[in-house]
Image 1 (spheres, rainbow, N blue to C red):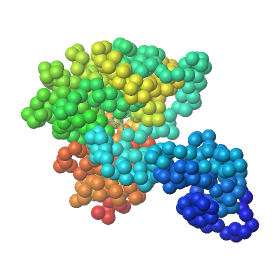
Image 2 (image 1 turned 135 degrees about the vertical axis):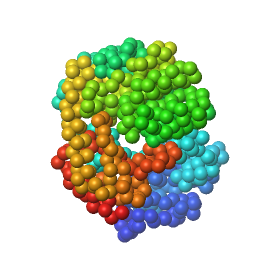
Image 3 (image 1 turned 120 degrees about the vertical axis):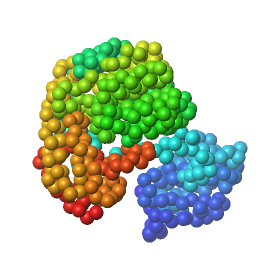
Image 4 (image 1 turned 135 degrees about the horizontal axis):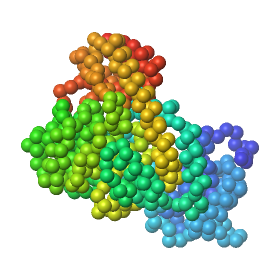
Amino acid sequence: MYIPNNIKKISPFKIIMVKSATGALLGTLEIKRNSKIPLYRQIEDKLRQMILNGALKARQKLPSTRELAIELAVSRITIKSVYEQLIAEGYVKAKIGAGTFVSEGLEAKKPLIPELKTVNEIFCSKPLSIAAERISLSKASTSYGSIMPFRPGVPALDKFPLKKWKRCVTRAMKEQNHSYFSYGEPTGATDLRNSISSHLVDSRGMQVRPSQIVITSGAQQAFVLISLVLLNLEDTVWYENPGHIAGREVMNIVGAKVKPVPIEEEGLDLNYAIRNYPSPKLIFTTPSHQQPLGITMSLSRRLALIKHAHANDAWIIEDDYDSEFRYKGRPLPALSALDNTGRVLYVGTFSKSMFSAVRIGYVVVPEFLVEPFAKARNILGQSSSPVTELALAQFLSSGGFSEHIRKMRRIYHERKDSLLNALQCYCGDTLSPRKTDAGMHIIADLKIEAEDWAVHKSLLTAGIDSLPLSIYCQEPINQSALVLGFANCSQKVITNLVCEMAEVLRKF
Ligand SMILES: Cc1ncc(COP(=O)(O)O)c(C=O)c1O
């Protein structure tokens, strides 16, 4: 950059007085030398602003390029390119032999891009949309953070068969030609829907046609689609309490009346719900493995729930998020397998069985709902990546998926037992872990007089990411407990971590 000799040292925020006719005004032209915005852009923006807000008047002469370059201590080439740009945009006009002048008829116009301060002022005076206000009240986080031990719901990412997956991705890429480098089908790739349908028939006891499956970007998007397509303002939703947090938030945001239904030994307390909140439009449930309490809904409760939904024209969401992981006997058939009324919307995800970055889930709906779901999906962001969809179809049909599940079932079983043993051994005086035969987390009741929230916070500072049971509750329940994910912790580290936990807990 050219710096004239007579200017020795320039502060990064120096305001420079320009001595020409426009000098007094251009004196406010502040340039920041340590800014990421190039100098030419800063000068251009300032001049545009001054012209638009009338600080530089129509027909007013600008300093010569030489003058301004010296005054601002920048190269003359920089100023020349600024002037050329402003001439091209019509802000100023060059008159040969006379100089550069501000164009006419511009001063009334407001700046196109207001300064940040002005932007904030504008938005502060305008309230957010009702939906955005509801979103800001939600527990949704704006960052994911790093994965720490015992965070519930995180699978053993290092055990995923990367080589096999890579082969599936490569094959999906090979099978494609460039015409496939476009948006995919809003309902998902046919191959993937076929593979998922076979998987559901084989392992969940369901009768599903591929045409009933709508692929989504994870289970969460399925909840969004269901809420948009089936819920109206003020509709009543029965929601498990405690229950899956993010699903509840969506239903709140669309303006439904989300009602907490307690969980008892057989699952969702149907009598309580009927007594307190008649005529639900939608019922959210996790019958295979209640999130987070881990209860499996009894057969009689399943049948009663379907019967009630049918008689009352209600939909049931069956969130089957981690049913692959049962450690005693075979996985139970889905609630959906008992339904011959078409009331159950079955939601599945590959976030737990594989890894959440794959961002693929699905919802099984009656045929007549496929079109509204596909349209809603299209509007919400088209499709998932067709390459990932084909790779996943390949992973499922080649047997890679079921092999992975079998392996993980064994590993998770061992990890679960290690965690239970370690908790009994080292935290016996402070925690009472509940036995479980399924899933990827356990619940440990606090034996000490402390809020689970406070315990969670203290454990976080020790690098342990258990969640408090209360975070899953819409209405407080009389239980203080920690939710501990065991899937992503090797047996080796579990004992050490539990010893550290014991120390933190002893301080309460
Ligand atoms: C109960 C439950 N359902 C579904 C999901 C999966 O959501 P997604 O498929 O959008 O990752 C989770 C994730 O944590 C969950 O806990």
